[in-house]
Length: 67
Image (cartoon, rainbow, N blue to C red):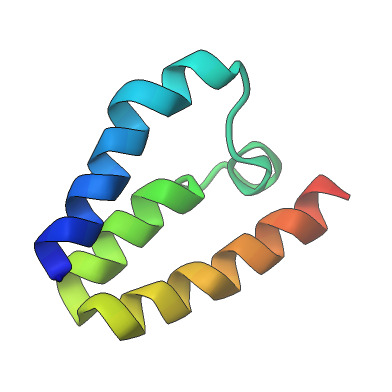
C-alpha cells in the first residue's frame, strides 16, 4: 500500500504539477516545502495512515493560506 501511495504522489509530481501553472499556497506563503513533498516524506517515514493524517493537516493549512 505504501508503494502505491508513493507512486501516486510521484506521478503527481511528474505529470500533473508541472502543467497546472501554480504551486502550493502554503509554500508561497511560508517558503517551506510544498504539500506534496511533505506528503511523500511523511508517507515514506510514518506509513500510509499516519502520513496521510499529516498531509491532511497540511492541506488544511494550505487552504487557509490560499484564502
